[in-house]
Image (cartoon, rainbow, N blue to C red):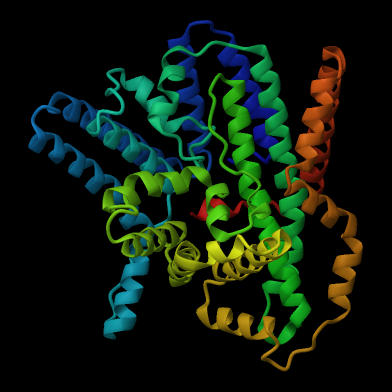
Length: 467
């Protein structure tokens, strides 16, 4: 089940809210959220609920073990090794086994049989969440949770279960154990959810349809401008797809009393790739910083090695394919150049140049992300820079741009903070009853448009489900 579906919007969410708020007791509400979350996860793949619950049980007892032996470092370290081995082992088995075997076959000429595992939805997210918990207990950053159902809620809560943001236990433990209903939070959460729904259904899905027209076909059938247009549309799609989902998760959290941290901060307004990665998928970036980069030595020792390792892992986290490894290393090289040279040079250059530089290299990076076929990726770059004999443009490009001009202007505006700032300014300076009326109208409009589009269209993919 996905948030941007009629089943979720008109059946699951209303039922969950009604049952949840029918009981004032917090522990009962936690149990209700657990039951609905497991049902949410089991909707598409019931078998993988077993894996999810196993992961929760394992790390619950590991956390208790580590806390019990904090004054005996060797035993505590055994606990953290057991947690990492189980979580990363499951991730490697289900997500990367086929990739490892296919790579070994191509390098050795052997013919090992691929197990063909189906990737459990959300495994990349919930394994990282439970790792952050056991590491937090080991580092004495948090106390171990002694109530299993409280810990299970942290792991399985449907708001962020299948596609993040990656929630850390320290950020939500107080709300798991003692959140209070706040009508204003519920109102704000509803607005944030509807905003994310609109971004996903209207902006991301439209961009995805245009992108598919130009990039999902043989290189011989496209043009130079068609390839550029398709790449621009994918750049728009992946941002609004994932940031829209994050907004929906954050909004749902507020509706149930949880306050999750923002996961995106208008990354396409960045003036460098360093700034871009501070603004994009913030929960993942800070996870790799705190649990990989800094333990390796950070900026203190072997900084170049550490950056290369972190970005190779960031790439492979996104998918079991060599293009994702290349994608990660592509950004690692640029970030190293910025760190050692380019950022100092850019300080003397106009802002428009810095923005242009960042957008161009972001676009070229998303090209690596899109094509899992490395041969098609190379051909794409050849076409983008006019090294092939394909036509420069055709009527399809002109028709796609002209028929979607107003949509494109809106998409570009919504990728900047200006509409949000204007809205906040108006709400702050108007009388309270007018502000509440405007928010209600915005919720009604965003939700209504989204539902109409969901009823009328069948194209509704979600990119991060495959990660």
